[in-house]
Length: 250
Image (cartoon, rainbow, N blue to C red; front, side, top):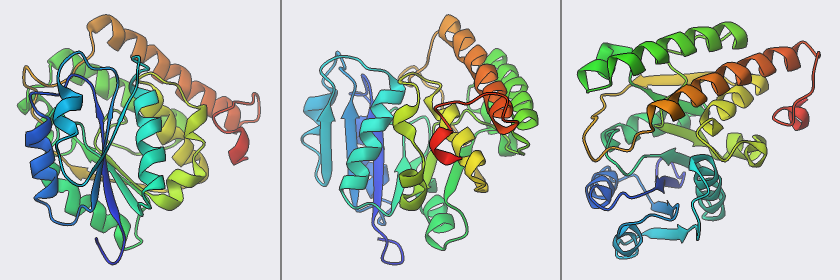
């Protein structure tokens, strides 16, 4: 609990057997987390078996691999069903340190913000933490373009470390979003559409052999999709087109 608000951490898992327990233990060590939701997207390892042995958890499984976005959709629906007031997404591959959960929660719990991102760019931690240089350059380029189209000032749009208020998640039609990696990007554009200010905290990251990562070809596809999402947002704002991402927000 934080100021009588229930804190639920969600973990979209895929082949996370090697790092799940370590991540979970550090999440619960923060002491303010009330519950953990783990959704497994048809892993090929023992992720589910390990998850089911962890206390204070809800474990759900997808019979087939549905994608990162679909995993998050299940995560958020389950967290809301658990009565979460603040939902924090932590990847179970230990790429992002759970030690920042109290800081992120406090920014929402005090009513200052409804969304907080853990930024790998602030503080210059990305490359130091092992982010490939080509990925860093792509991150900066895409973020520049997205900031221009959305009239935003975020240091990055592509972090997987995020916290949301219940109020915000209930307003966002995230079920209309992609089941793939672009889901995260679409959520941020929806938040901007609603006029919410997004907070960022600097976040050290660790790129290890056990950390999840997408291939170069998938990264290129993701980059193109980011540009398309940003363009669609701007055209929809100008009322030139209508998009299902924002139709219910108008």
